[in-house]
Image (cartoon, rainbow, N blue to C red; front, side, top):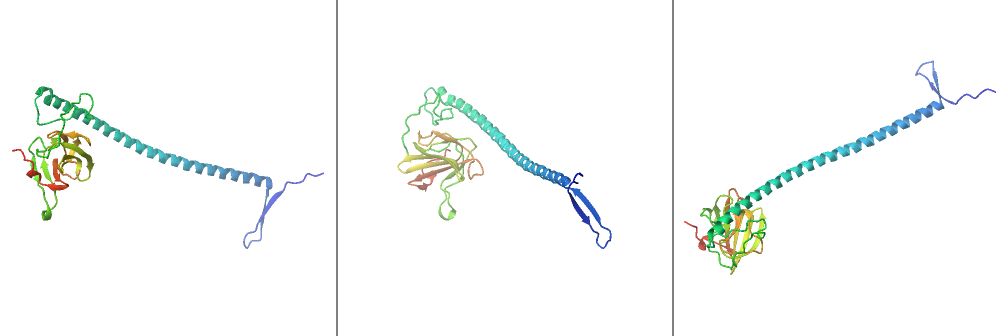
Length: 260
């Protein structure tokens, strides 16, 4: 008995306008192998494409992490610089307090400095005498300074106080006794302090480089409440000083006198 021949796929090729034709016979077994090979190739290509997208996404994430790391390093450096600056300021205040404190042997001083601690109430803090409310009558600086802008109203413009040019980190002191009602920062005044003196009077001290009091704190006249700077809408170090009576600006030069 003869063995059956394997099944084949016969393809006949007839040239256009030609007489001779060609016939190709491909066993179905080869076709199955070719189909399997094509399927494996397609699967491999699919896996490669998926891997490429995964690796691309991971690479993008790595770039983002690198940027975040660089930003973190920069922030850490700035924090370290700020920490060193605060340590320097605290050391300077320690020296100043020793001059105005123990060296005076109980003698009264025109300038009251805050304790040389970051919180103002830590170890070694001194208790100031009770601060009674009083109308603003003291020059708000420990030096004369130079008035660059007086109070302006009406047609000439609106400038509700004095601008006094002084070097950065000069002492800003309370023009009268009272209670600190606001310690904040904005785009115009920069860092500022507001003190309520009672009787409708309040004072504002703006463009400071550093606050030295907290909201709710009672202060006495001449007590240092901040350091001068150029924060907010400012082009050079100076103090912007306002006196308000029932919310209305009063010319400070009517109540305080600039040292000669």
